[in-house]
Image (cartoon, rainbow, N blue to C red):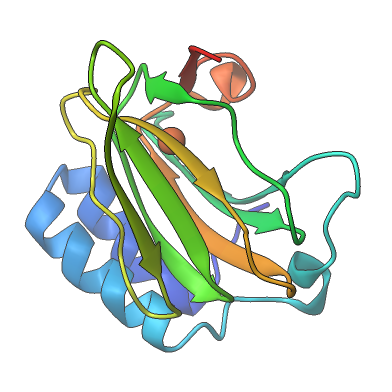
Length: 158
Ligand SMILES: [Fe+2]
């Protein structure tokens, strides 16, 4: 797991400080130049979107993950239990956001290098999907303790 790829170090420093403005800037750089992306990150799991753990904060404050989405794969509709920021390294990502009543609010699509809306106060409810015909790799930071990685990020609605 550690040491961290040099291309992700600035993100980790900003996240460790809790400086979200700097985190957005460094995330944009990491998305524009994804030298950290390894060939295996393009290989997904045909059953469901796949998380690759790239870095764990030694003080357990956050994790950095790449998520691989094969064509047609989508997350459930979910909110978050922790802060999160993400953007697109390769491929096209579609995000639909919903209100607290789960009525659709907006849909956006993002290209490589773009960041989607951040959720620092756990207010966003969304579904993320790959509606393209090619694999998608997104880069996510979550303010989650590593031992809670599987159950401590999402609040699932549907
Ligand atoms: Fe999410």
